[in-house]
Picture 1: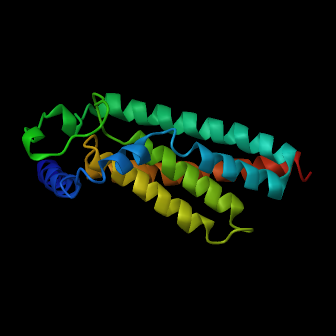
Picture 2: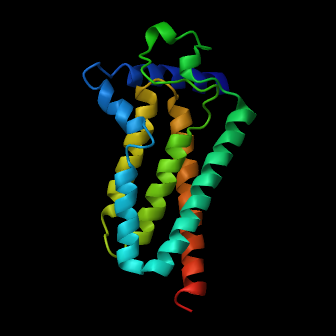
Picture 3: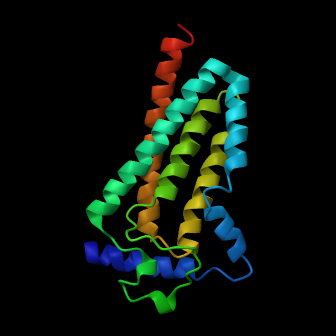
Length: 190
């Protein structure tokens, strides 16, 4: 059963990865770069400040830092625990069939840290700001999906790595959203 899932996962990876073209490689390399979205994070922090104030913003910053640390570290635990090689490591013998354009290729890929971190941030920001910007969550979820796909495009993650990362990120984002709401009630609106 697992072998069959991994076979389909490899086939889907090759299909999605080979949709790329040299014309768009620069865009997907920019999307997959963690520093590209710093302006978006700054805008989200400004919106949180504007709607909730300085004291709440400090709570949000602490909770988001904890959330990203949590998702990042749990991702590493899974990567070391499962030791699933990334497609760019060519353990499956597919390197000559794929497009590899990433700057570097880490050792293990299950599950994707980019996917889990981006989805956690999307869910957290989307739910927190939903009372003020009701469609923001859909924009954030779309953004997270694009970041996740970029990992397949550049050749460093299989689709299962992405789906599991997105799922874990959504759960983490919701948990830390609830933590932030609890802290706001306890320290800001009390």
